[in-house]
Structures are given as structure tokens and as C-alpha cells.
Image (tube, rainbow, N blue to C red):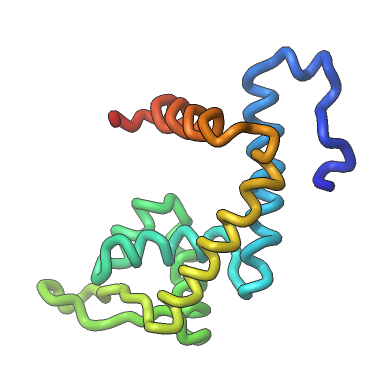
Length: 148
């Protein structure tokens, strides 16, 4: 069980921001543990997800999309490349840039990580009925600024 207790203290349960942070922390911990078995960290998952969504994106675009520090991004991409999960190719329109792509192994690892993430959903959100989870997801997207 995460955090030693399945419920925060009642006085804190009255504070929406605290509850959002508490559930977020539980979710981050469970997610990190689920993908760690695949040799991934959450930032790597985020980068691989963005590269998968936009193959050939430039490194600076990836930095902007993930808000990962540029120097951290270089080291992370070096690690993904060394692990055979991603590769840098010459950019089609700018020879100063590299186009980022997942390898076949990277695509399969990302699929496995997504399955692991879906599997940990019950650990964090298992108290919700499927309709409630869908509504929570919709409300979080709305709060984050998505227009659905």
C-alpha cells in the first residue's frame, strides 16, 4: 500500500488542492514503480510518448512539449539511444537539427509501459466506478485547459 495509509487525515480531506496532490503523489509513485520494471523512468515515458505521437520531431520541440530541461533531455536521449529505444536521424529540413524516432524496440517498450500504466490504474483509482473514472478524467482535462 502506498504512503502507509489508504486515506489522508480527515481534516486534510476537506481541502481539494491537498486531495488532488495526495492522489497525484500516489499515482506518480504507482506509475513509476510499474514502468521501472521495464527499465523506464516517467520522464523517459513522457519523451517516448511525444516522439511516438510525432515521429521526426526535433529535440527542441520535445523539450518544449515535455518541459524537460534541455541538458537533462540530451542525457536522457543519449540513454534511450544507448538502450536501443530511440534514435536521432538527420532532420529533413534543417541539417542543424536531429529528427527523433523510436526504434522498433522503443515502440514495443512504450506499448508495454502503457499496459503497465493501465494496470496500475486500479491501485490508485480502483474505488471509482468506470463512469466516475471517466468523469474524473474529463474534469481533469477541463481543468488543465483542454477543450473537448
